[in-house]
Image (cartoon, one colour):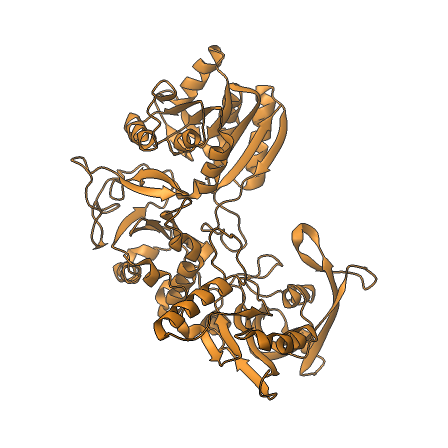
Length: 586
């Protein structure tokens, strides 16, 4: 596959104006204005510079110089103007800093219409903005020394009650200005999870135009970016939910947006932190409920979650989704159909649920007589996966941040990995310099693959890296009697499990299991406690862990939440399916 085809540096269709002095682009909603991670820059300026440099090399003339005077929030789309010559900087900077450059926006809100009942065509919002909680911006008292005046002029453009598109003219340019002021006016922008906006496929805020004086001609120049199709769809129909699959334009927009947001991961397949396995589409978090798509090297794995709505009973709908994924340009697409009930016991290798071969494109070449493993990279560490072997591939991609944390903390430590499956956490610990790892899982077949994973990173000393095929509850009870102690324990059980000796249900039994794990932890040891049970929220999970400490007679010094990777966004108004706590005991 060609990653430059899937994730190009820049699309020339985003350029809405260009001359010798200026360039203006219609920034997509998923692109940050500046890089959040210097090691994986995915920001507008870096990508545009790469595009201009490639164009210069192709044409044999031109420059890749960019002067930056304006930024938009990552989730806001629309016009960004930059200079192409240093000589143009002073004039443009003066206009933006002096507020003579006019910036107009379009915002989608719910519940605004009553604000204009006084018969006026426009309303002016005049507030003092200052620092709020958790890095947010808030409306503060005019007497607050840290406050800055924010002025926004508002007019109604279109309305399909209860949804309204507003035209905004920003007289000032404060951080999150429109978002904070509209939220304060009881009409937060749809899709704005930070300031209480309602459900929408994205933040419904678009920088429609910038008007300024051209630095060379001295004449007024207005640069405009067409209103995104997504905003018109939202105005007419609101949050489509599962109906997105029956609206070709909305479905295509959602795919394009999700793929664009994974630019840094998609292009980060080389170097020390090379990653070739990650989530491309995450269900409702990417406005595509019931659909998850993962990247494994040059292949995709599409997971369809069955539900009471019968979304995937429609064969034509299913085939259309697979066709659209195939069109992205990967070598092949595998399919997994997941049952409606998470605890339903099914034969996960049934061909109608998990075909052994790719359903689009070509399959992964077999690496051995038994099918072998495809090696993928996660931040430079190799792991083996099998794309056509049942519903699971052998690697849980949502644990990437947690594996990094284990790798960084493991040096010189003894590490216990419970419910180890194919031993990905043990691999991370070994790479990080753990002196000992013990991987416990009831499935010997999974541990065999775990052994291959450890060998893949050079962890070949079986005395230092022990694999134990036994029920975790049984092993913990015996280890406590032997007075075994570990410096770092990973507890990541399935939501449901059943063996000869024990039955585990994540929503009711987690505290008892965690108490058993704490009994084999050394003084000052750390527990990485995880749960992906969707009926257990973060608050309840934290209570489970604290109850476990009381049952085990241990004292928690610190319990810190570990965030899920950004390629697993939570659903609108919800929280992440994966809850993780990094727990330090006294």
